[in-house]
Length: 120
Image 1: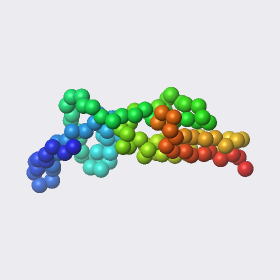
Image 2: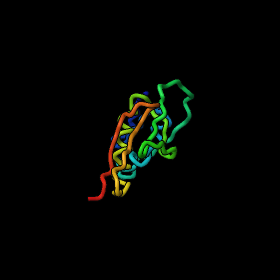
Image 3: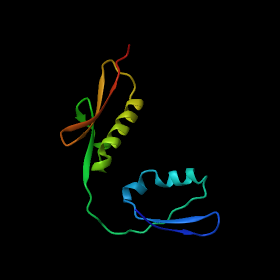
Image 4: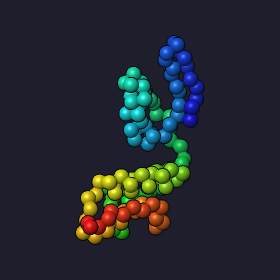
């Protein structure tokens, strides 16, 4: 949530925002550096704890949950994040002798699915 902005001079602006810590930890600093061609920086301080609609997103490979890929995400972003993780995992897993199902699930509900094809 954007609090306010300050114009430091004609070329620089300071943005004051409140962001979930998860948003900062997942590539935020890298995105700032790439967008600003290395000139952007960030400073942060803890703004306290707040209630949010969080869910545990599990990734299943052939129906078995892989704990290393489990993550806590906001409910509104869970489906998009599940699709993104499943698609990325599909790119990384090499072709097998049989079809490999990659699924993203919240609780028992499958929200995204990709498949690694069998070798031809």
